[in-house]
Length: 332
Image (cartoon, rainbow, N blue to C red; front, side, top):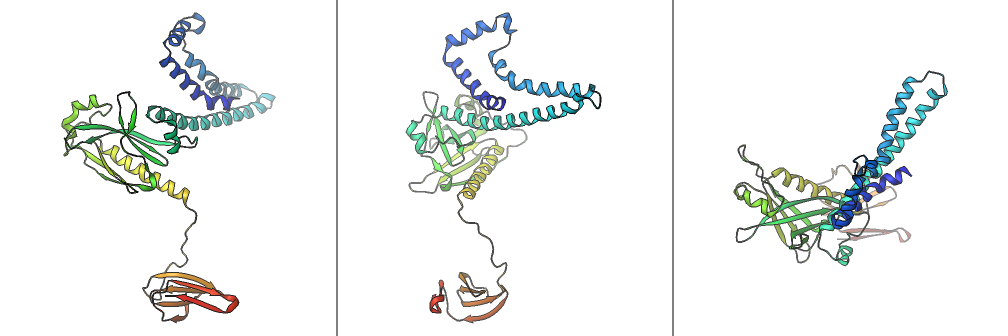
């Protein structure tokens, strides 16, 4: 029960916070109740976390009891086992909390997006295993040299480029970019020692830092959709470390996705090829003999080192052995 409660505790707090912000009557009710002396001026949120925080205190309490227990008594024998069980339970709770925090981070970000349920389904955002890796605010310079706020959301399979709308949500600026079709380049320009990083929280707060957002001061991140009807978007930020971290995060996400989708594991068969500089186009094995098809001919190897024969058939593309018929077919 403790591990289940710990896993759902963050979601309970999130639901409570949402209800308080959307329901003024409920917020007033909680405010009035918390003034009751029985609550000891504690908020309802503090009661939500108490069951799990108590476990940590129990560990400290029992360890103190163990220090005072005489050797050879039943307490001295049993209390270490109790401490170990409590620590294992706390470890499970922390692990479940970590997973819950990632899921809650995803849910909170999806609330900010002005998307229809069908759009989220099409983008794969309804998948409970989906993960939001990073989100941040950048600027885009229009053709008129005006600055436009852009909000980037990097998921484990897709990148969303959005902009704020009048409802306070983020709508798509361009179509989503699957990581398989995402190409990223960056241009780093560290600020000089006498310059300050500008605040990029909202467009209104950015206007006071326009001098820092000149082309000489900003680092840029260029995102390109390499698929059909592709496009290119360049965003900037005065914090060059943010640009660097985003570039690294995208490259890491692309590699992770590539590793997950890889169907075959490629391992080297020959560490070196000392029988010419030609490219090996194909290979097959017959009676422990390695037969290579290269641009310079067909080469037979034994033990990967000794050349048994070479046929001067140039630009060999495919070799097939028909053992039943004692035939070797060579396509060149």
